[in-house]
Image 1 (spheres, rainbow, N blue to C red):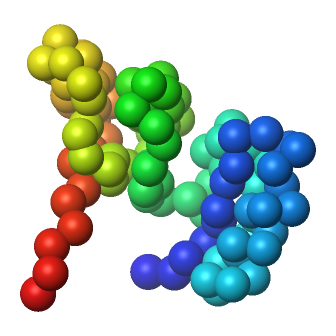
Image 2: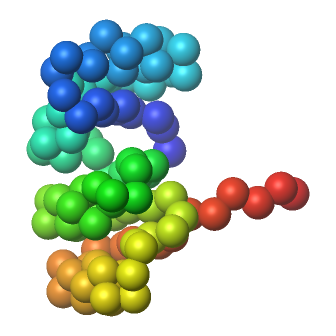
Image 3: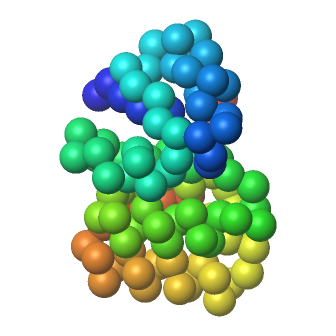
Length: 103
């Protein structure tokens, strides 16, 4: 596995994404989530977006056919969580809630 692309929500934030890429060893920076999701080299997306936008972003990731690890909580309601699980199953795409643990 390799850190391939870091994406930002808008092209205006691209310099921040490029700085993050350089600091953490990513190969590429994208000026939008759509640009990153369209890249055939992207297999898995780690999403740490704010709770208020999470369902929309996870839906976009799953619709693009990409596996995703979603920062906790997966969703802010049981209904939203169920909708995301249903979509992941329909698309045959892996999705999980990520949780940091100390080993």
